[in-house]
Image 1 (tube, helix red, strand yellow):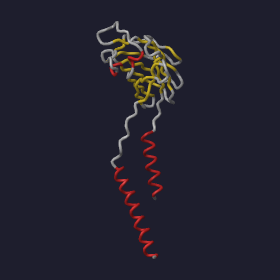
Image 2: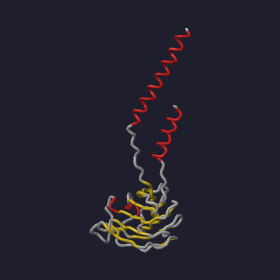
Image 3: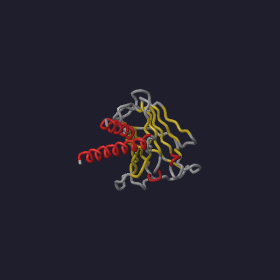
Image 4: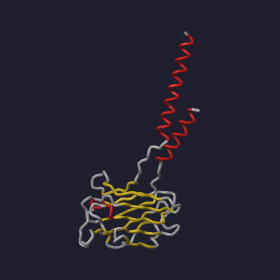
Length: 195
């Protein structure tokens, strides 16, 4: 019985903490460089149907100066749009457009609101958020952070929400304590009876 409870608890916590990214992203370095070159690779088993890049999450509240043309091994997006006062750049694909293993690349010149001649550098893109929608309805959400390799630029990491302690966990701990106490008393009773 106890083994079953422990197994069930391990499965619940394993399912709650497991995630599959499905996309790898980078902005080529060096960190102080003016050339902003995004690259995304679909590493998941599903087609990507949309990819959005939000500059409003950066310290400089970056905006995109247009929808850049793309290159890579994927089919061209069916559309590319700017929204949210040019903070949000979104590409869309139909079925079979951005399949597993394909790469999307593009160059862009981000600016700050009201300053179209702002010279953004790679490190200005720290915290740019990325949302990816897959064909099966699953979503990847991440942001760009500094790549630890010297001069490598930025890398995309998945946003991982904290896993809250289930309300039943304190109850489970109390139950285990009770079982331990009962076992201790039973053992103590058995020892006293034998003496």
